[in-house]
Image (cartoon, rainbow, N blue to C red):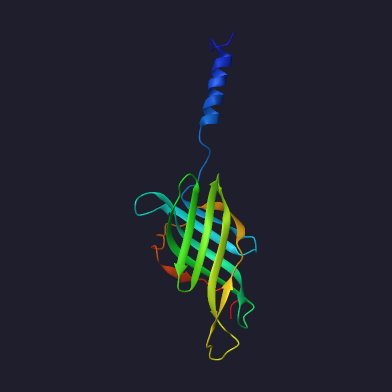
Length: 172
């Protein structure tokens, strides 16, 4: 004899509770991955100044073909603070700077984030010494994926508007 008077009802209620529990959504920490062209990318999620979950920082490396000069491709990387609020598991990031312009869409699913990204940057024409013009370099709009890699050390996020250049091995 069962301890539950209505075992089928009890099982149904448990199943309904399990299925109605929200799945893991975005969480504070770092998401690391690569863009379609194989360049490393990471996003930091944390609480912004209003205590709202947001993308508070990013580290983007990119490969951007150049137009108009002698530089064929710019390989570069930047780290920056941002405040892209996450709403309904989505965020949009725009990072305007005199040295780059980066846009990204973010979609959080479980411990992953996916989306698209594009970068634009000037590059002093290496064919001129000293340089007297800049090439315009732009990466194509491309997909990326990143996976939650942990909360990392207890270091404060870069303040919004702070920029840090990450030199890649391919740079001169």
